[in-house]
Amino acid sequence: MHMLTCQKELFSLPEEVTYLNNAYMAPSLKSVSEAGLQGIHQKNTPYVIRPQDFFEPTEVLREAYARIINAPNPQQIVTVPSISYGIANAAQNIDFRPGDEILLIDEQFPSNYYIWQRLAEEQQLTIKTITPPDTLENRGQLWNERILQAINSKTKVVSMGQVHWADGTKFDLMAIRQKTRAVDALLILDGTQSVGALPFDVQAIQPDALICAAYKWLMGPYSIGLAYYGEYFNQGKPIEESWMNRYNSEDFANLVNYQEAYQPGALRYEVGEHSNFILIPMLSEAVRQINAWGVDHIQEYCRRLTAPFIEQLKKLGCWVEDEAYRGAHLFGVRLPEEVDVTEVKNTFAQEKIYVSVRGNAVRIATHLYNDEKDWQKLVNCFEQVLISRTA
Image (cartoon, rainbow, N blue to C red; front, side):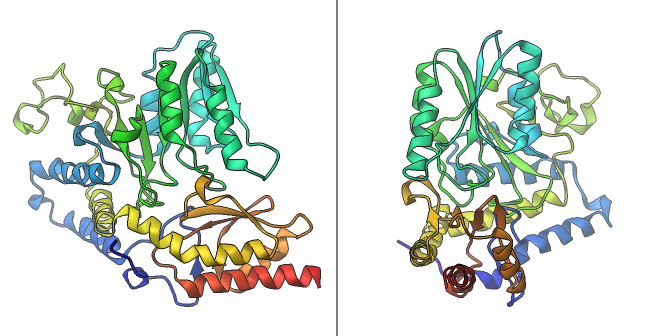
């Protein structure tokens, strides 16, 4: 297997900074920033922008992203401005009946909650939230079992992530998909915290929708994302009526010969002005680079890098989820109960280590720009705080 080495030289991170917070926001690749600057300058000479330039770059992006998620038909992939937009397009095209259940995961990101809350109030639906077990022992396994047990004949939709955004718990989507199929329920996924760093296979999992913001593990800019919609949604109503989403809109001379028909596949759900001349080139370059690296190689690099340091953290009394129930790119490190998280935060700040802290857990999100030096620095900080507590 081709093994990746540290790719820090492709980024602009300062040497003294240890950035372990990709789940908050990815640093831009130098090539992605360059693509954005070229996009800005292109508008200095608008006369060089041709009608086909409104369409072709997005087609290239669709095809490149289809490779990342192994989607057979790029026309089922559209650009969206956000997770909430992408999920709303799906949610508002589900044929609910009063009493139907929507199954969500405890404390999932709000973009994948509020639309369901509104629909539940409007259409007399029930939201079922699946909480993790109180114990840390076999936590990931037990949480997955709870989800499977909660799916029943009343379940209309399960909407969740591939991993939990707050602590990286990995969900068994193959088993969940199987159970949803058995009860004729839809599976709608937010892949923001996994797709691009953790392998995802549309043809294996067959989700009804997969929506991803671009600015984290897809290494792209903010305010753009990619949504895959399955065939269930191919006849739905989009939340906006963009002229570009109508049949034959590439023919600028005939735009006012209004069209009833939409573009094929899921293209009706594409955000208006999707040919964003700055964001599309940036995201295309990011996706190109991910394909060049290979998602499985990114995950393997993170696994090799983190494994020895996770062992050290466990010896210090910290808890990390079993490897089977987390990705190697994103996971929570829970501190012993007597430890003051503020002290840990302050130590990190002094050392210019960037992570996210939630409750008594530290969320760590690593990528190809990190190396052993970063992780040694992180473990040294944990050591400093934990050993001073027990000394």
